[in-house]
Length: 240
Image (tube, rainbow, N blue to C red; front, side):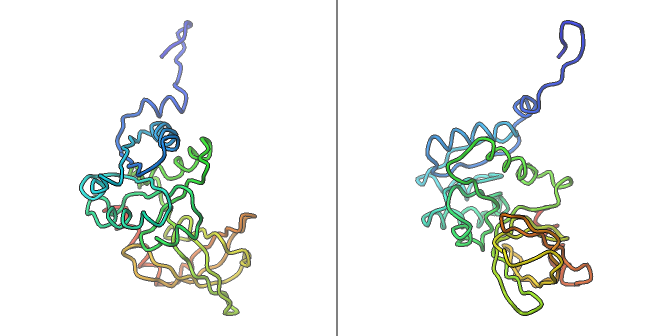
């Protein structure tokens, strides 16, 4: 595109996203109209098509291929998550919860909820979360090494004290954990967690940063040979 002087004009970032070919699909399961409309509009900016799915046709999550699924975090959706995760084509899809708390997400920790949209949905926060998780939805793995995933993490400090938090992102080199206010930078710990097909694993590490929202960053001990299991799982997760 050019202006009247012949100078090329580049599309705005949002416009560029809208013009991008749709190459991924997200199922919106049993969401109210307002939430569904906002999510549809925001997903579209990242080249992701949305497909409304109701309880009546929930079997689609098992039969059809989706790259992501957004559903309300309530007790009645447990079987929906299981149905999607048990599908050969959807076992690795990105699952977003709407509403609820980290404790609600932990109810389904064995299925690994990836991220939560907090209610009431707000456009800027929704776009921010989509932007951070988009590479995983679009399978842009070469440029994305951190996997957003929520699972329960047990943390044992050197003095044998134990706290339980929730993972936010994980990579072969470390992870971020929320709900661990007693941990401090520099502290040596051992963490244990499980991820879908990865049975519970124990890894040594140390706290590298802490934020006011009670989240901390953990770097795994490079000399811990058990880290190989996590590396292998991440490679398999991204390539499946």
